[in-house]
Amino acid sequence: MKYRNFPGTDVKASEVGFGVWTVATTWWGITERQVGVDMLRRALELGITFYDTADTYSDGGAETILPEAFPTQRDEITIATKFGYDIYNSVADPSQRERPQNWEPTYLRIAVEKSLERLKTDRIDFYQMHNPRIDDLRRDDLLAELEALKQEGKIRAYGATLGPAINDRQIEETAYILEHTKMDAVQIIYNLFEQQIGAPNFALAEKNGKGLLARVPHASDLLLGRLNEKTTFAPGDHRNWRMTSNEAKRLWLDRGLLKVERIDFLTNNTGRTLGQAALQYVLSHPSMVTVLPNIYDMPLLEELAAASDVAPLSEAELQMLNDLHEHDYYLEDVA
Image (cartoon, rainbow, N blue to C red; front, side):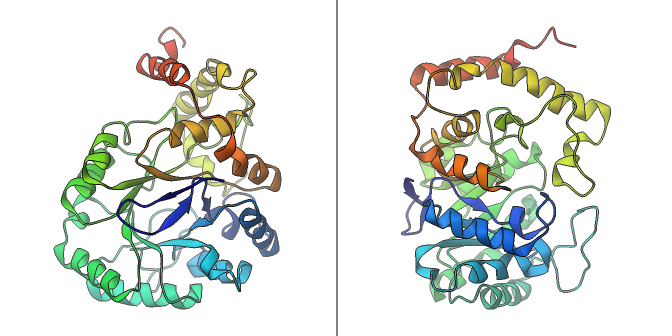
């Protein structure tokens, strides 16, 4: 495993991180707590030190699982969590719709103290606004309070996670964070097939000394090679949002499988799996601090934890990928 620092800070992250929501909610098929604990412990053994969670996942359960898994290893791991959804005055929607948000500085203070308590720690390494919109990012009072928490040592770095689903508005939101705030980094959806948020903002990140984090690096498993045209997901599985209509399924799954066929050069005699190559693509951008794949079983954990150590993509491979992306993988004639 290789490691990178959040620019301008001493906060270090493993190149491959762990999104805790897969093991602490039921959205990815894991229903037994101990299975999640075992996976987190194995991840650390494999060199994964960056764990990204949020207070809203399982109403705090995705925070309490970290000290449960790592009771004596706090100094060995880097914890990122999030705030913004008012979990204390609302009930989680079974359909996974967004809950009401609260961006008042007074609520921020409550949220950070509650997270510190659940995490059983005295500091949060990377604290993120959870799915803000542009007007929320412009709240000087909130940003001043985040800066105060950083000065107090309760948080070591801060930023925002943009979502929930990918949306073109996040291009502007990312640019605003990078150019007009003191935030250290921003987490976006970015992968080989969905580059619209990251591509226009990589230069801004480097220019302003800010970091980026990528989630959904496998386009909801398309880039793992685990899906086919008959794939369905169980009720409650988070990936169902990709297939809310026949047209959505066609654009994501059917065309996505055709795209996967066109990138087999990434795995032919390269020593990489498709999943590893997808992570190496994201990590090829210098401003990318860490990538957060959705890990939900042990074989996948073993495979993706090794991605940091496989051969980086060559310049020729990157050029081929850029050409494919610019031409929509030459699928214009595919129905």
